[in-house]
Amino acid sequence: MKCPGQDMQYWTSEAIYEVNCPECDKAVEFYKDDTTRSCSHCAHRFVNPRMDFGCAAYCKFADQCIGTLPEEFVGAQENLLKDKVAVEMKRYYKTDFKRIGYLSRIARHAENIGKQEGVNLAVVLCAAYLKDIEQVDAENQTTAEKILENLGAKEEIRTEVCSLIEALKDGHIDVSREAGSLADAASIALLEERNKEQAIDEKQFENFISNEIATEAGRLVAKSVFSHLAVS
Image 1 (cartoon, rainbow, N blue to C red):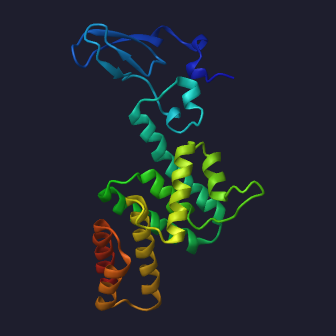
Image 2: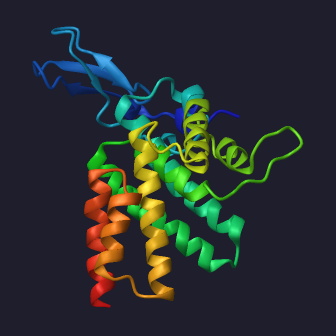
Image 3: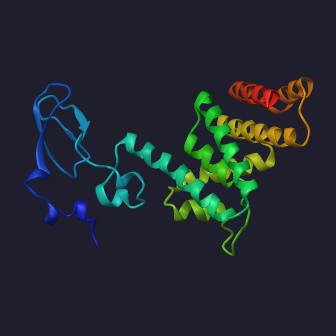
């Protein structure tokens, strides 16, 4: 069954329209399912400003449905993937709220660190949510891989996420900025857990910064977290 929104038999007269080129202001004709078009006057290629990519941003069949998505919408797909992985993580751990909270804190710290380090946030956050899921099925596929596959993650993303989880598990945090960012986030979340059992003093924190944090952004986030721990 074809998506009704893309099936021409459901189209009305509004399905074909003209948009002014952002470069030369000449009219460019668009069909409602055109992702991009080139201006016949100046050859500038631009995204269809009236196309609704809402479902395409999360649908794993988007490429088959409307063709190659513009780069900015590929990014939207990846951003939505991490949100869907977060939901699946919570379903996996069910009522283990301690584990869910711990992994959510890692993801929050990873996002703060990753933004400053300029990493692929979709990969880092998916790895943060899935890093403790280690079950392997009969086909030697990990549960983390299966979750990503079921959510429609592209093979490239699945490979990067699983490689990042393995790097963290093996202690190879120097292989990439993504690995360093995730490792720092996990260390900061663990520091918070230790502080619940026994308050961390300033000397212990300085040792922690020196020995367990790899990135500059990680140091900044750790200091911010510690300042809140010291106050509370």
